Length: 601
Image 1 (cartoon, helix red, strand yellow):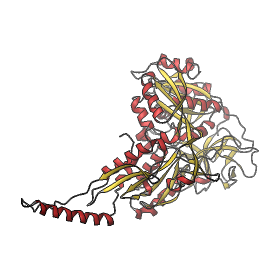
Image 2 (cartoon, rainbow, N blue to C red):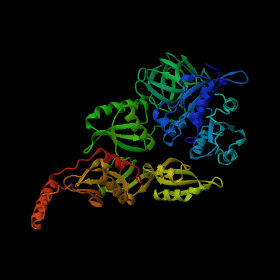
Image 3 (cartoon, one colour):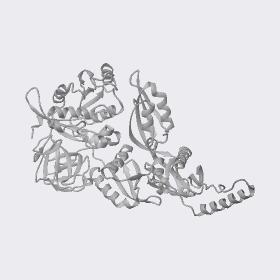
Image 4 (cartoon, helix red, strand yellow):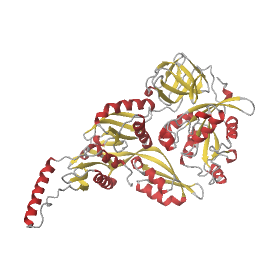
């Protein structure tokens, strides 16, 4: 393997849609590690969903060989990172694997919320930051303004910023030289005991789990016994190598390298991102810092559309879990929807990605119940319980207090949209804690707000209010007291458990009214009236009615006495009453989906 002075490990960090994947494409093309015939845009994004949405979901790594101007041959390891806030733990592990970062700033949009938060993350890990201004070929590019932002907002020297256009391939050579000159070579010695960081993994159906590693000390060879420090499990290395888009076997990795190992591991959940790998025979003294269990923040139940497909769904969930260790699920059942699973997700985007992958990759038709967060509930007598499912909510009479998770939300917006955004945050129960003018045109707002308010339509509305210019970033700050209620939806007087939601008391009436309206439009008319009610305990707070279909019993009456018509109508009314007593409502699948749609569509 290469000597450490000829290795550079770096990542690209940026806000969503600032051109990170396109820049990675140009670096890979320049190094000619893939034949032009097989090249496609967003080469590191290997899921269809990533391509369509223009986001990176799974972090990738690639080893790029580069011959510098001084004639030396360098090995550049690019660890690609996801850009979305839901995957911030993966970002932090990827950043921890590097010595430097390219901080990408869009020449048309400038510094945005996640540019700042990702830069602070990189600074926490003592990375050398190289500012890069991308999209300089765009007509709307304003380089002097963006340089001023880099100086003022980021505190970096804009004179050292590399100007490039990833789309046109402008400035790529200068960027390569900047990586070699300004990012330090990795430390560590190959003779020391093995110490390596797991920054990702993926599942290969033929070879088991492929573990993605960055070696800080020591070396890994084929046949060597290794140990994972979080659970002390021991494996024998079958093969080791580097990423050159495909897996290229080298048989050995040494200090400073980024690569992969295969060691006959059968399930992804045995491998934990952020864990330290060491030698079983000669272990290192301490683990690498920063490892923590990934905790889900959003919960939802998932059911097959046809209850006969439960076994297929279970198999699909097991396979999906092999590729996504952060997905957590357990068995669940509902009177309305049959058997399913209760799942935990890192955020709403993670939930959407899982839903799309189940439908596309595994051909499953599924229904998700309304997303919920984890509430802390105190029952009279002093016992605290955590609840994420409305089914587990205790009776109001036994409840002493409830707390819900809060986030610290950061919104960066042009000043033109400030009033509307502040109104939106207030509507979502946000409390403003700070407001900073970054320059004459942009302002940063910091809000404390409940996570449950962000789940539904906050992000969509923020984007439409600001015409896409406002950026949003958040982190969980802790629990605060709240007034919590369980909203039940009753059809024909019977509660439907799959439509129940845990809501803030102040929003319960509005939420109940909208759910009832949606259901009224979705439920087909029957021969009898169907009342749709929203209730908190025994108190009805909203109602809609699906009117009955009526057979025209007066069709055969032409003229004649009114009493004959009245007699026929009375007879029909009696029949309807009897039918209502035995009638049951058929709830279409579209009704469940309608309830989950954005609240203001």
